[in-house]
Image (cartoon, helix red, strand yellow):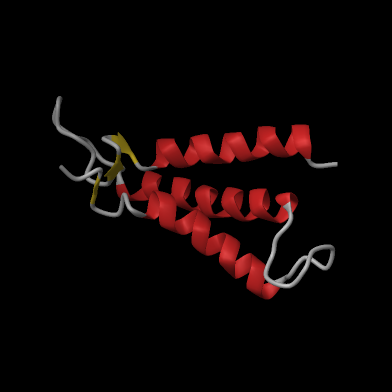
Length: 99
C-alpha cells in the first residue's frame, strides 16, 4: 500500500527542501552554525508548502470521473490539501509563538 501517488511525495519533500535551502542561503545569525530558529523553520516550511499548493493545484486540475482518485495524492487526498494545512499550521503557530 502506497501513501502517495504521482508527485504526492513532494508534500513532504518540498517544505524540507525549502527549509534547507533557506538555511543555506540565509543562515540565521541569532543561532549557532547548523541550527535554525523557529521563525526560520516555520518560514521555510510555509514557503515550501505554498509552492506545493500551487503545484498540486496545477497538476490535479481537470475533470475526474466520480470515484476516481486524484492523479497526485498524499494519504489519499489531493496533494494540495495537506500542503495547505501545513501552511495554515505554520501561520497560526508563527502568530502565536514567534515574537
